[in-house]
Length: 153
Image (cartoon, rainbow, N blue to C red; front, side, top):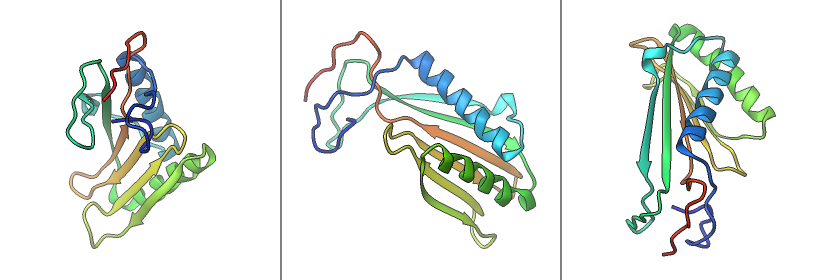
């Protein structure tokens, strides 16, 4: 629920829901350009959720997370190279690559997972065989809306 694992009351990063969604949209579009694909508008799914703490704490100060998903059609044969291009660009931006695979023996065959070390945003790019799509997911850490007083545990 917090920005720091050591202090459950550490200040949370602040961002409005509209700004978080705009950032996720921009970042997803940037990844799609790196991959050489176009996002299908009808597949965009922003999902806001309440932050839940490590011990199931639920605060009432407006804190939230965003999971933003979007898909682009891409044949299986091109998914690995597309994810590698995204990975190269994420590395240039300072993202830590947590995992990468391109293996037809598992489903999904292509998975790229990355994290922004300083902002704790998580990125997932997955390629599927059926339907043949590249799925982009951006997940925020717990964020607090601007102008709201952060409650303490």
